Image 1 (tube, rainbow, N blue to C red):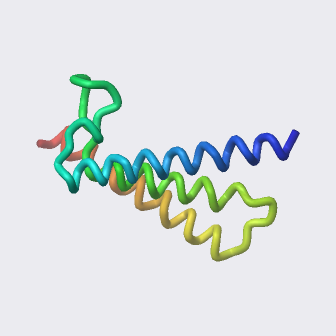
Image 2: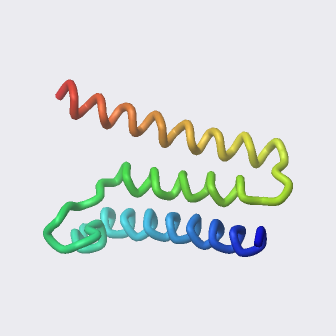
Length: 96
């Protein structure tokens, strides 16, 4: 059963990274349809794409059977950056 959850977690992390890359490509090429999950609903911003990539990397690194110290440090740094971006974005919306 553990092997299936590893495949699911790896697939989810790679899908998250691919989504983030898709958003960044749309941002740099100025294609609004690349940054939208559904036409006309909302567009994902640059920082959302970066957060998708960083969270996918953190998930991918922590899903190994044996996680070494470097993998832990990199994944915690990625998660910390995602948290910092989230807090700064939220404070921007709250305080203008």
